[in-house]
Image 1 (cartoon, rainbow, N blue to C red):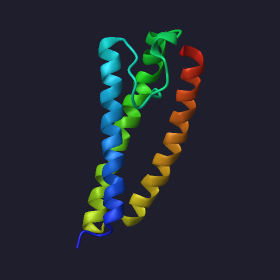
Image 2 (cartoon, rainbow, N blue to C red):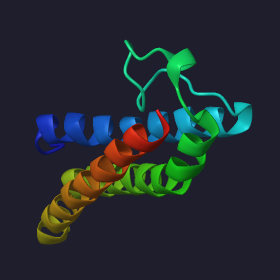
Image 3 (cartoon, rainbow, N blue to C red):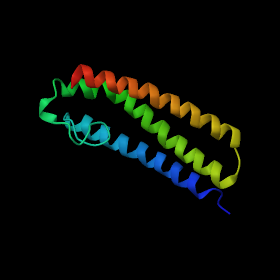
Length: 116
């Protein structure tokens, strides 16, 4: 009735990850401090960061854009799974999202080297 339940689960997780990533970045932007979570590993010692403000400034727009795209893609995929429509377009959006994640990982790695 609802299509492939596994796809719905994955799409829901994509949407949730986008929301949590955005929440984490907005908290860092407001406080001006690094917070452990999606962007920093649990074993990362915040006190050893060279330039936390620079890291937040460098990653802010990139993270907001990615998180909004994650949430939008997740919701779009859920609608596509539930309605059975947009099959080809939904597949294309998955590949585009995967490419954006690779680009974002490049920027995150660069930010870690420069600022942390």
